[in-house]
Structure formats: structure tokens, C-alpha cells
Figure 1 (cartoon, one colour):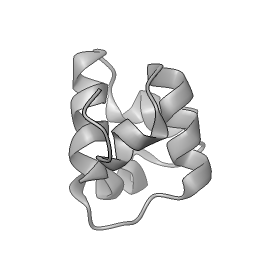
Figure 2 (cartoon, rainbow, N blue to C red):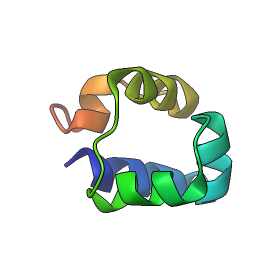
Figure 3 (cartoon, rainbow, N blue to C red):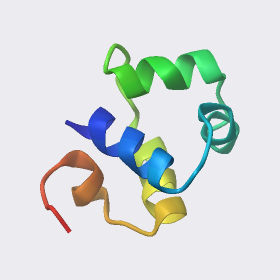
Length: 66
């Protein structure tokens, strides 16, 4: 579920995969695999994304809808 949320958050904030990959200190290709659900995301990167998008980690993980 998280991969759908991070994809939606990225698009809602008009960011590219490359921009988010740089934020996470990874490659665009690796980040693309995270968004597609073929590669797991680490907890520290979920925290970085939550802070960046100003949402909770529970929201990203699909535990809460707001």
C-alpha cells in the first residue's frame, strides 16, 4: 500500500522521481522500483518522506487515511 501513497504524494506535489530519489540519496531507477512495489522501502526513508510531505508515517504506510 505504501508505494501507492508515495506515488500519489509525489504527483500531488509536482515532484519528479529524480527529485525524490535525490532526497533519499538513491537513484531514480531504485526509487522507481520502490514506487512500483518491487523493492521495499526502509524505515528511515519513510521518515524522510513523511517529513518532506508533512504527513505521518502511518499515512504513508496506509494505517490512516489522513
